[in-house]
Structures are given as structure tokens and as C-alpha cells.
Image (cartoon, rainbow, N blue to C red; front, side, top):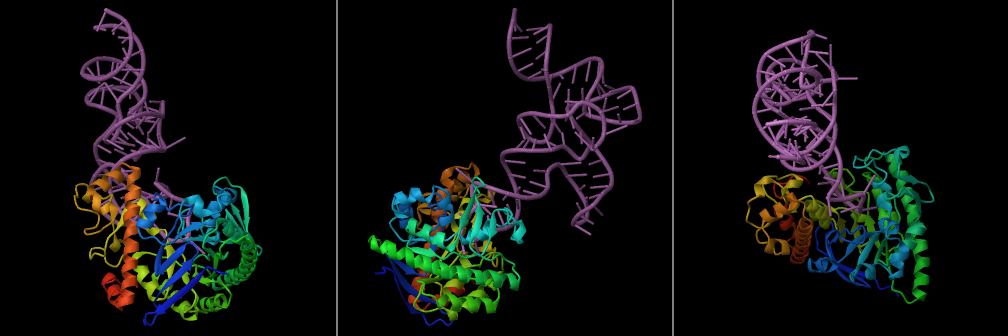
Length: 405
RNA sequence: GCUGAGGUGGCGGAGUGGACAAUCGCAGCAGUCUGUAAAACUGCCGGCCGACAGGCCUACCCAAGUUCGAAUCUUGGCCUCAGCA
């Protein structure tokens, strides 16, 4: 029996906003929910206990990274990620599909891949050859192997093996990549179903599978992909290939095109999106969960979330301060007045500024705690506003004067 | 006081007659970051002008020289460090 289910209620908001509950073998997720990213089996600098306290219900681990190190035999010997990491809540794993995109780029440069320049990645119909960023060794991922790996990891939600299409992509390439992603989704589902049968015999709980919608920024492709994946017997739908360099307007378009073609009875995950202003847009368009590295990555760069201010209105900076700035050197106030997080209730901006300036490890922790708290609190307030019917008002307040969208 | 080594941009430290406004590292400043090759990366970093190209000025302890040309060679001075007294 599948210990995975989803229930939701529409909010009446035209674009499709909804609230719901995902039930997994390791617990319940109230949606919409933010999903922090713990690529290498850790949300950088934080313990599982801290994540729980911060209101994290689910977090994201990467199959590719954990496959390389420590290796699946190690994690398998623990019976999976939950025991290995000491986290008993729900886990979602990525398939390696994003690495098809990210490792193909020249390091830190915008995506300008042609298939030849893809030094660390080679895509074939059967799957993808990766060159390890650790030691250069070659590894092959296919839909089948990715499914097998994710079952070994024991995550509650698996992602089908896809290609995260780079941006910009020509319509021809976007179609080619999308069609291949669809074929891989079918193979992923077949492999997943077989693996479930064998795990079931051993009395192990079900692990869910989400198919991935691709199609770049092309309406016809996105709709076709949404319908294709929706027609499959997967447990949920993930939307990928966004936040890869396109404008926010284009990203919003993708959601507008896709949402109407998704089933109501399956959870939806938006892959890799979660800047503060994005959150309102993705919730409005009926996304249930969404993961993003931004809160934790930017935290380690000294960028701390604060409610929108007029100084930087209309930019990403409207939602954060750079604590390394000299204006905070003597600032005795907390990062965010009134914030209830551990960081804000114990330390001043000046102290955190100092920790960053001297590169003390605690800086990364305190900053990550604040940013994750900020986002989980925000999303919790959003859930509440959806229940009360005040979501659009709230959105208006947070995006006020902000013409990003 | 003697002997030896040395004084270069905020710091450390290359350069040792023209390709030097001066390699490089650190610090500083600015920017970037959305399914994490990210405690990362990129750019700037003597002054003035310029959007850029580039131009002008002042510079390698101080002074006087040698030379077409000196951070680099010579002489004198000042200072620092190490060893010996």
C-alpha cells in the first residue's frame, strides 16, 4: 500500500492558489511549503534539530552528490538518508537532472552551452555521462539508475530523471530536450514501479515519484509537457527548467501556462525557485512545495532577509541587507526588528557583521538560521492568509511598489 | 661601535638599466548569486580627466650623479633588522 497521499482545497484565487497536506511515511507536510536544499545530505551549517525548530517540514538532497560522496553503499548500509543524516522527517531527492544543466556550464559563467563545450556532461538517449567534479572520474546516470539510487537513498519523494534545459534554448533544442525528458519520465516510472515491487516485498514503505515538466519558455511546449506528465501514473508533478536565467516575467508565464493543465489531486513541486517575491507568484499559481538554495547560499554571503523596504524597491535587494556593509559595524539592533529567530533574539547586526568580516564559522550558521526562519515564517503566514482569504492583500503588501512582476 | 642583510603601493612580498604605474598574495571597494562544482565567483584597487580607447601628473627611503633612458648602476645621507661588542 502506498503511504503517500495528497489532499488540497482551492482558495478561489483564479490563478489556482491552493493549500493542502502531503502525507509521507516520515510525516506530514502542510502546503504551500518551502523546501531548503541540503545538496550533500546537509543543509549547510545546520543540524536536523535546528531545521525542525525553524519549521522546516521537508528538505532536498541531491542524488548525484550523495552518489559520488559518500557513495550509495555507505548510505545504503544505514538503510537510507534518514538514518544517515539523523533526520526523521520527509526528504525529497533530486534525480541528477539539474546537474545535466549546472555541470554543463563553464564554471560560474552564464549558460552558453553548445553540446561540444559540455566538459563535464555528455547527454545521450540512454542517459548522461558525468565527469565527477571531485576527481574527474566518469559516471553514467540513466532514468533507471537514478530511480535505483533514489530508492537506496530512501527519500520520501523522488524526482524523475530529466534534463534541466538551459536558457536560452532554441525552440528546436527545447523540444528535443523535452521529448527526451518525457521518454526518460516513462522509463523512470517503469523502473520506479519495479523497484517499489521489490521493496514492498521487504516490507519497506512506499517512496513517491514526481514527473518533471520541461519545455523552456515556449507556451506550446510547456502545455504539451504539462499534459504529458499529468497523464502519467506519477504521484506528483515537478516543474523544472525555470530560474535558469530567464526573466521573472518569463517564469511567471511558464506557471500560467502549466498550472491549468495539471491535475488537482496531485502535489506540485516547483524546482529551484524561491526568491521572496517569487514565493508569492508561485503560491498564487498553485505550487505546493518549492525548493531554493537562495536563503542558505545568500546567508553564507552575508545577505540577510528583511521585509521589503523602499530603498531598494523593485530589485532583489529590496528583501535583504548585506550585513558585511560598514554601516552595520556599530549597529546594535538585531538583523530584523521583531524577528523571533535565534539569531535575532540573541545577537546584534554589529556582532554578525564582525563574524563575517573575520570569517568566523558562526556567521554562516547565524545567517542561515535567520534566512530559513524568515522564509518558513513567511510561508507559514502565507498559508494562514490563504485560509483567511487575505493572500492577495498580503501579496500586495510584500510586492508593493515592486514592479518585478 | 664593528660585521652582514635590507629599505618597493594599506600590509606582505616580486622585480634588479628600457617591454614598469610596477608580477603575486592579503586587506579594502564594487558587483553576481533561484532543483548548490558556491564559507564561492567576477571586476576595481597611486592621483586627475574620459562612457571606452586613451591622455596627463606624481611615484619604488632622501639627495646628488652616471645614462638617450634608473625602482634597478655610482656616491653621500637617514633608517631598520641579524650577529658581534
